[in-house]
Length: 316
Length: 250
Ligand SMILES: Nc1ncnc2c1ncn2[C@@H]1O[C@H](COP(=O)(O)OP(=O)(O)OP(=O)(O)O)[C@@H](O)[C@H]1O
Ligand SMILES: [Mg+2]
Figure 1 (tube, chains in turn yellow, green):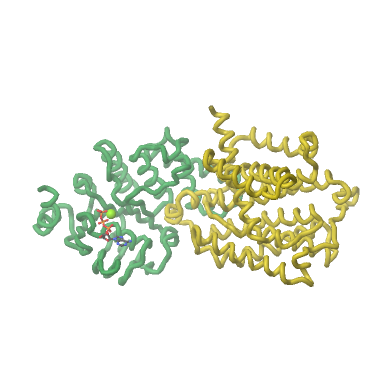
Figure 2: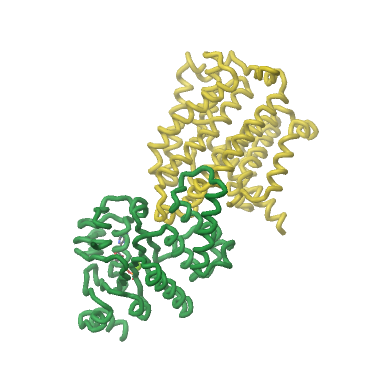
């Protein structure tokens, strides 16, 4: 349905991502920036599963991003876990938290839902902030790093090579994005889009709205936690800011900026956001004002986001 | 046994008594029209039966089962489907996808994360059939929001029908329509009733439609049942003439 059409766009995105570490260098970027775009893109697309395709706004997704990050980081630091088990543990912790918190909040709607998501999200922030001995507190969790992945026949040195990490992240990104695309084009996905379109009609077709929103929330948090785990691996570090509500807000900005009605929109929003952040913050302290300005202009003149604008231009 | 049984249902909104001690039954295969002046409580009555609002007192029984405390979506699962006075559809989705959602839910696929070829073919066939029955065969790919009022109505009715309901409740399906559209909808309702044997409750202001289609008519006024009977009995009732038909004729 909406936003999933256009195989050409899928192929184009695939090719761009496949070569990003190479063309990044040509335009003054670097591989780590490419990885950051990928990871934040996955986070924004995951948020958009809930926001753009179920019509439910969460301002607390940083909590699950951060739980994924801390889960993976702590698994490596304290348990000596390998890369994949670390990611899995981050996902598990975040998803369990999302299941419990989701159940507590699904009855709220609109701005009330958004507000309770912030409130619950901040709980984890303060926990990470205060619990010094385990989380490293405000200084973050250091003293660990991602390890090369041993496939038996060969090793992928994601630690030593930035490019190797990028392609490792790209594979995980691809799996997650494909899973979300499949879900959205399934009967289950259609019930979510139906809820977005008209909650009353969906209910009177027999959809238990709260349960489906809960499921969508959990799926969305599950994928955002993968992004969080990758983010910790990318930086070999995580700190409480990975859990804080301003990150939640940034994810919403990325989704809206790129176009929350389109499947790839949030990835484009994330790319613009992360690139601007990188470029502007090296020149001025006030990078958030620049992003804010871009955001306001896009929302004002292209309510369907940057991708929506490009689509309209292509049609004309 | 009656399909639907309403026992002493009342609904208050603050000091306003929108439905006042209404009891009625609808038998299987019946087409029951509900008429009454504006604000009589007809829509509120549908809301009570379908579960959108809870009655202040009284009970709703469906196939002998007390559904008064049941959520709307659970009543839908038992076979109660409805349309709304102001059409409720998924405006940004195509006509076919609107109906598809309903077909998939009816087939028990609402949690299915992946549907195989056979399942999809079954759904497609059902969607095509419903599009045809609703006179929407050539509009399957059109965004519902872009359809005419009458076609949106037809789409909403076909979505409800996709659920294979045992009781279909239609709230003013011809409201705001021209003669031709009204005729099309009336013909569709008659077909569903006569050919498919569907039990239907119909709120309707157009008396030609009512007297043409209904087996029995319930007249509501100020939340109370003013009269109930066959079209002939209702048209001959002095009470109804005075309170309602008289006014409409004047
Ligand atoms: N949710 C509500 N809150 C308060 N009052 C309500 C509510 N719903 C209906 N009412 C009131 O209850 C009364 C009955 O309304 P209802 O919509 O059931 O009438 P109706 O017979 O369907 O009228 P119409 O022919 O205009 O559709 C009206 O006075 C209406 O204002
Ligand atoms: Mg009404």
